Image (cartoon, helix red, strand yellow):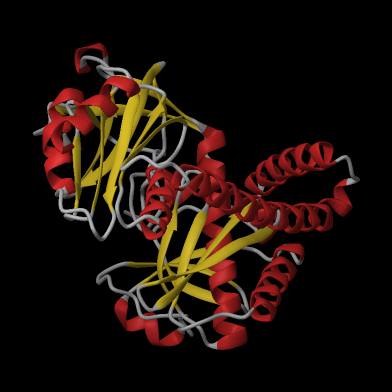
Length: 394
């Protein structure tokens, strides 16, 4: 492991090596094994490198047993003998920034609050660490971020050192290591000592900056999301675009967007309450008008009315008129919906009405002897549906 090129020089972008073996895994993926490699395989929370071998794309890199397999997107017969490898450096350096940033931020939480990181994930957009605490305050997050960025600004060296298990006692490790044999330490002097097999830049300054984005509860821990380096600029650009768009739509300067949005939402809630009240008044007016009929079967057809609105109308009418049956239909785009209700002095079962008319609209419904509701396809007119509903009563 010590002799691998990505450990000898994490900043190496291109290299030459010899093909020692080719193969196909159980999933049918083609791979090659090299005499040495600068391609980092997936492991320790850090994703694999990509790049090319003789201009042929390397799409995945995995360590299987004692060999590192480079999966390629074509037949392995095109690769023989000496090959030239070239890393996708933008991807590799991004991973190095994020991984080193994780070490720095994790150490800040330990130093300031004795809060250990129990897991780490380097995603394509954000990085997360799970902190073994019940909660973190905003003040703690600000303090940890500030301490991490101080370490970055100091541009401390990031060193690596191979040691044996016997030598572990000579180092104040942030946490116990899980490996045996040769152990690789990643060291930020006088700040963080940690066993790690990932790749990192040579100094903290190359991480550039760390920004915490948010937290959430996760299985008894607190998950902290953050970004480092170029990802901070990407995140800032995205948020700037969104904020500018919101400010433009609100016709206010960006700095006033939050207050303007708060006022707008408050106004919207007031308007929604007034609209609900107006709808209730309208329903009551319509119900009174329908209940004033002298007929024993009251029917009405509507457009774009919800089942809930039809039910309110029906309940009001049968409360006013205990001797009537109410049949209401609404056409909503390509659907027909209906409600049937009876007054207290009517014996006809509303379930019978639903059972009779649902086949006409390929519909489904339910309810009680006193009130039913249903809906289906708009394959007959609302008027014909009302006629079918009356057939059971007559």
